[in-house]
Amino acid sequence: MSAGNRAGTPQDAARLEALWSGEFGDAYTERNAAAGDERRRFWRATLDEFPASRVLEVGCNLGANLRWIAGEGALDAACGVDVNLHALGRLRRAVPAARPVAAAALDLPFGDRAFDLVFTVGVLIHQPPAALPGVMAEIVRCSRRFVICGEYYAPEPTEVAYRGQTGALFKRDFGGLYRQLFPGLALRKQQFLSTADGWDDVTFWMFEKVGG
Image (cartoon, rainbow, N blue to C red; front, side):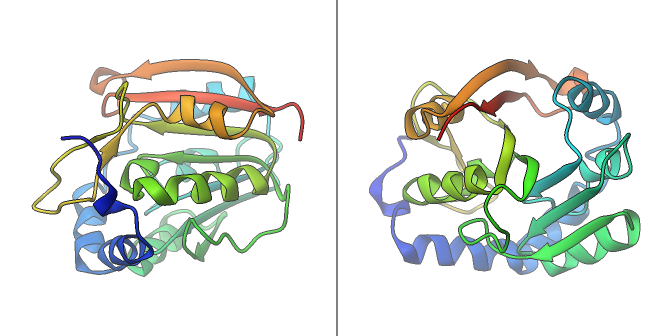
């Protein structure tokens, strides 16, 4: 199904924020409690290749990624933003070295260039298509150097039915959209990781800010 305009209004963004901050989001958190068990190798290799002392994950949930990032090497700060308070509570208990912050991706409560690396994993897919440029702009604004996104890829924007919800999951070429919207981002690496790698068929794009 093509992603249509019906997922492009401020009401759509508010609806999805309410969905993920409520019981639907709580259930997602519990269902995916073990999702990050196999991700240590990936994050160690990624931080070796893209060194960062201050890291922000947008849409961190309970810390499937931050558990492997917080306290690594010369890391000074690991921060996670999410709208689901249940998930942030679990993050606080499971990863004391990470700072949990309740906020929406469209309005990140940080200064410009506050982090060396800002990233998402499986978060842009849940943004209404019309909200994506704003979310990406916030991510780029908060990054001093690196931007990473790991999302479901499709050559064209495509809506996917998701657990009885409509307008809640969209696949597309997220890396291509980043490059289109932000010419100052240079693509440094792209890779696909399958379920055999401990991921859910995710395409990663690693960018570095080189201008603007």
